[in-house]
Image (tube, rainbow, N blue to C red; front, side, top):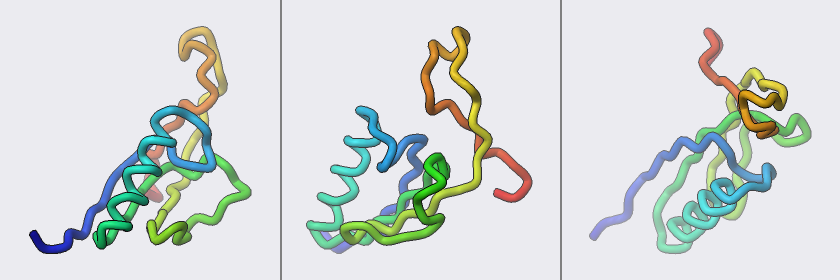
Amino acid sequence: MGLLRICTFSNLFPPVVSGSSTQSSALARELVRRGHSVTVITPHLDKSTARHEVVDGVEIYRLPCIRVPPTPLTLNFPWVNFTFTPAN
């Protein structure tokens, strides 16, 4: 099997700490370790991070987003966001 160019979309990705971000990051790093090219597209939730960077061989693009404040409707989850903006 030849090497693949893999692009994945993840609503949560490090430095956000959650179960799905941890699993997405681990999978992306393992695919890179196996020789694949991996790009992750995710919301730009932590403004201290770069909009584009390569971490452990994983190319990460963070899109501008609108964060929704935690509410009872969102079960007080702090990372609800929307990336469907005209800029994206």
